[in-house]
Image (cartoon, rainbow, N blue to C red; front, top):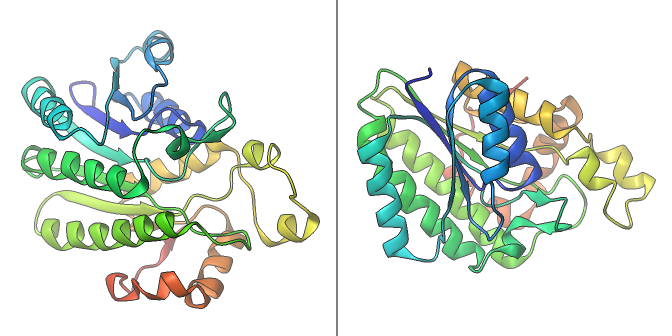
Length: 260
């Protein structure tokens, strides 16, 4: 895999970095895309030295169409992209103690559109490979509180976009998967008002374990990946009770089975 690259959009959060470590451990080169002002250069150098891979760090403003076009053209000209991981929606920065999307200049809708443009721009090259992978991290309210309206709309669009990609790419070697990441253990410990009622309802996992399950599931060709048995049960019991989730149910394949 050393002649090919994986792009991680939104690599600056805890989960994005964990994904980078797991993919680097498997010997694949990386293009780490920060969609905020966070600089990933030192992190990329550390991965290079530890895993003997190539890792490039890039900052990308998802609200700037010209910047996106320049980025995707440069990528197509210089690299062969084996996998694209879209992690722009639900990650957390421990250093900044806030959600990555809160650090970005753009809103959820703008970030989604920018990530979609990046994906479609790289598809012609990826679909020409014998095998390639696209993976979307899509949040689900495992805890009892609901998402903001903007995030609900963005998540709904990501579901629809994932299904559109699956239909578009079903006769190619590109595998499309979605991950509902479990609440991250060390992040949840930083948040206030996490009473026992929440701890009993959800299964928190370390970022590295979530990343391992996400990467392994992606390579197996799993379409739906939900780390943690209790989280998978919670997902199936509660998705129909969430009004904004029902609004995109037509975009979901009822045959999707979660990856272990």
